[in-house]
Image 1: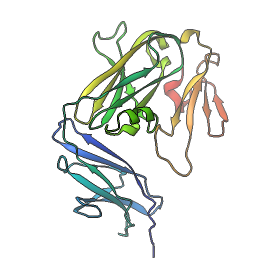
Image 2: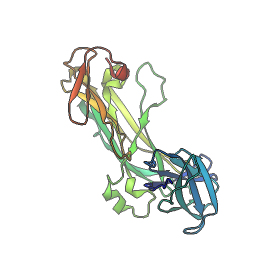
Image 3: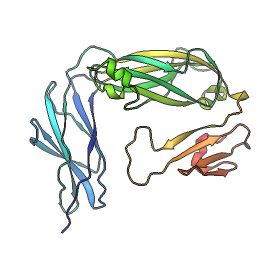
Image 4: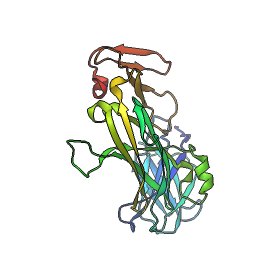
Length: 291
């Protein structure tokens, strides 16, 4: 008879609000079970430790939003895996979170790097800072000012920064009451080559933080001058695994690198052992980075 041994751990509880502050939700995420027989999960929801007021079958998903809670009330969650034949595992460890009460406080924080008015910027640039909120920062957006030929007054979206748990213990210590203080640090790897004019010219970057109550706040701006045309340094990025991703077992570690002195359209693919495979010309795997 098959007996499941659950290796599942809920590793993150993030409290979110939808755009309408009255529609509160708690977001749960957990590690996928290692047994190949597992076909789905159920979430046990209780209003007291160890209790179960409702059981929700979420299928094969490992992320689920609890949207029927009452603001200010604390709830307790456990997860079980199940098979197609109806067998269920033991429960995971229990986690708890309170549905927050909406406030009017916007996010706050800082835009730290790159330095203001930096010149000679080439290749990859770390765009970093920190952001906090009383009910939790849910997103940090990186945008840039329009350049000649683009719509005036409309910022251009570049991407979302990643939250980096444990990266800013100084901020966590300074604001001990802030929600999600341990992941206050955020970062975005900006490839300047993909800015207008192949990353040659002056650009102004903006960082906006969004909170769980639907507020947005400007964390700051930075103006930099890029000069990729005169660069002689290779550049690139690590694509997998993702920043902050939880992994186990064998993991593919891929990325790409370009060099100004390499033949036009060439790239290199690196593996975990530090070996590379150089492929002249256009490569289907990295069509977006082929020059």
